[in-house]
Length: 499
Image 1: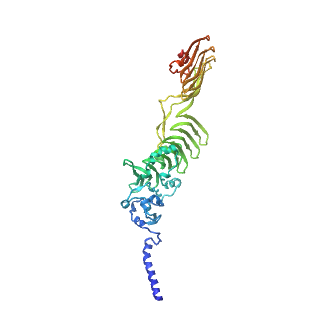
Image 2: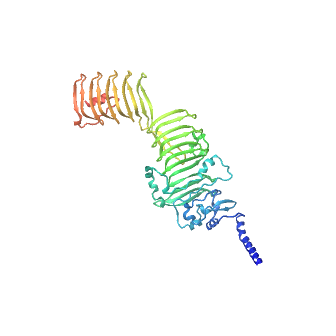
Image 3: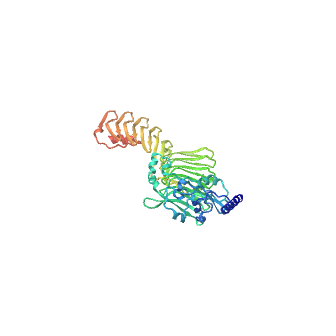
């Protein structure tokens, strides 16, 4: 009996060695993990077309994003290709002839994003790869329609057409390659309502050395959400101008988009992650602050915008933080003091004037890293704005009043050269309103009446130079046209016109 049992034990041991040896040798003597049928099948895919390093350190895509394509496959299994480890190809969304043949239906919703290729091992990491390239190599999986960013009521209404029917759109992955076979662009494509192929989903671009240089998301062929782009100095003339020329290339340009328009902040950092500029946008035009810094982190310039027009203060500082320039703009017009003189150098008029409007000639171009260009609208005249004072040649005040964008507003008062009050009345948005009174040089009234919206109303009275009434008219009983009384000469255009 003992001999029989010993024989059986020896037989079992030999069989175990015979079965296990080929499997261990096939994996170089290492103990493999669980090998699923899906992984064995993926190991036979033609991986020669995958650029070197494209799968290095690539984590498996979340199972929830793979759906039918990885159904039945095991998670995060690793196998050897040559002398390096890569994730199982079944967890990477790279289509081949075999996989397209086996696929029964299009990819639904948004597929797993293409991850960035790690830089070649022979390239030593620098500050840029550590601070900038790494964030680009880990793009976030696009959120589903139900989990997208929270928006205000206005913004939600604006993007409603984009969100309509998104969950029903089917996408497929399209790849473009360099002549050497390296991956250049990976983008998701969908068909619109008319059957046209449009970009919809994750979009990424790599350099010839395998470094990710741009990424973002399209919705119905329009940029949407956060976009990032790396740029060398020679890719844009802007990067050779102040203050960019003082910073270290390459640069990282990041911006927020909504429905294809810049909407949020456009920020540029250098290779050391020092902020160079930041411009705020709303619906494709500048809205908010535009700021620039020097290499020491000191703010050197700031411009305020409202709906694409310069509006507010334009400030400039020295590199040590001293304010050296301040200009004020209103709706694209520079507000500046203006003084006129008589031939004898005595003041004739003093106040503020709005220069012609500055308009945008070319808009900001995020992809090509070019800032908007502006110019003065030559067809737009200057306008008085703010308090105005005029003088007679003898130095006596002639006029005091306030203008708003070229229109008289509020109370105006005129005087004769002898200092006697000549006229007084009020304007609302450039039209006469309320009670108006004119006096003669002797101090006696010459005319008095009331305006409503520039039209004379109610009882008007005129007096002679001796104070006797010369005329009375009730304008409420007549169909009168508006009377234009110029602030510079109220006696002639006002009193004489009504007589």
